[in-house]
Length: 142
Picture (spheres, one colour):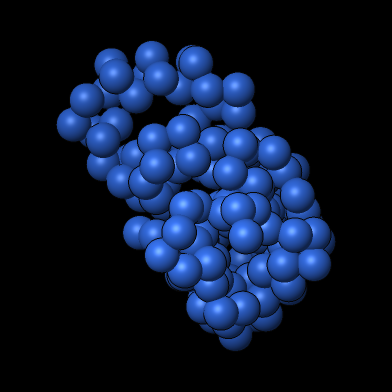
């Protein structure tokens, strides 16, 4: 497999929403993307910020563009803000340098997609997507 199916994307969203409930997080927006940054699935919980779809797109876009988690993108932004600022302008989905998006593998092969969350703290957003990836039997790249 080189990309996630719609069924897998929906399973990831469902697992993320279940994890958010388990962790008692604030209302979230969850989205799953293919390796090219195209959105496969998105859900915004009642009460989640309206800008959530753009934030999850920016988190996942940066992660996919640089091949690292959005947490690492944030760390890179602190170390080299001019580079991340410039790269963010080149990325079609923008770049949100904050934790909450993780890359997904189905084994030792290539990245098959990304999942991102927004609406709680960035650390909690990341915990939610990590739990979702693990719940569906995929591998999170941090």
